Length: 154
Image (cartoon, rainbow, N blue to C red; front, side, top):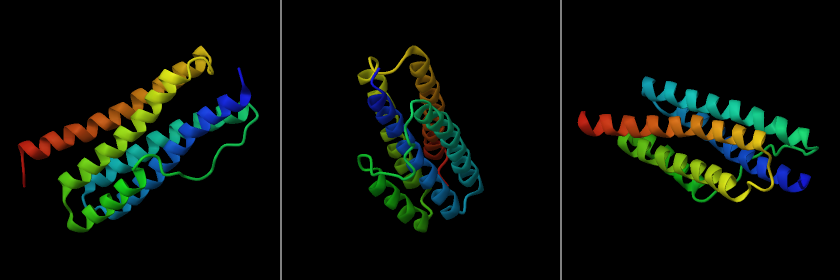
């Protein structure tokens, strides 16, 4: 195993979770809806848990965990749109944007799992798959909320 490649893989996932933590913190502060505020804070906690495991892995391999965020795909633009949607208090728009952001996160995890199997060991793959399941559950929660909103418009 190439330590630098392993560190890069895990730092990519750290960055994804850093983005998610920052974005859901911002979203929880912007929304007036109690249910959504609670939801966003729970999503933030999911990424904090994932990030801790990923940071531990980076350090284990002798690397320095990335501290900041990056623009992955259209993630930044999507979250700017979310902030705009909050000003209109349009729950459907907020959920659509959240779902898109969650799709970007899952795609990054999918890419790591499909392309980097040779660089990481079975234990690491299992950890990443477990995190994927947690993040997928958050994604599915967003989808469920959207479906409820469509079924019961205000």
